[in-house]
Image (cartoon, rainbow, N blue to C red):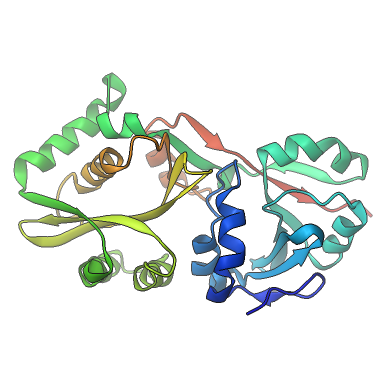
Length: 293
């Protein structure tokens, strides 16, 4: 499917990957939503549509909670009239990167726009080496849980290939039964089914010979960071999530400096859990609201 020129939009489709993936993979800020897989897998959740702006930069339109938003992965347009036109059909601009905000904030505010940090959507960034080694007192509890897992269970780990997807699907189905709600189940299922098409990478973990956990994601920020899109485990095995977190970080290539574990969406329990791993920083995101009448 061809991507139309603005003001026309088309739904995100797998055939758009050759056009979008190279551009998105070169973005330096490393926002977790700005990968082709992220847009494709959540296209139904947010009704994502895409269009070309001048100079073949991208604008993505979406919907959440009855509001329409747009995203500009490649930065603000030079033409402020074009930005004003986008605001005629959208309620706000979402996920403006920290570098684009720093470069464009003065111009935005001079034109009457309101710029706000979107803390609930900050991505959590961790040093890969710290997650792999869990050094010092700050990780004492995590190490204890990992050691409890290692002492109690026989495990095996392996990189996930297309032939292994059936084992990961089994884990996902069991996870869904235990949780009693769908959560991101549909996107996680499609990610496994499209693992080759989307060039996702992951690891599988077996306990006592049975599939027990998997992690799935992809590099971003020009290969310096790795976004963990999905991590599912059968939590009857004590310490399995802490073990998988540590083992996957240790398995990643050393040239990957950071692990991006995405946002907490304002959930207090999730925020607390993510903070216990001591993030080294955040991938900050900003919202821009239209001019006051």
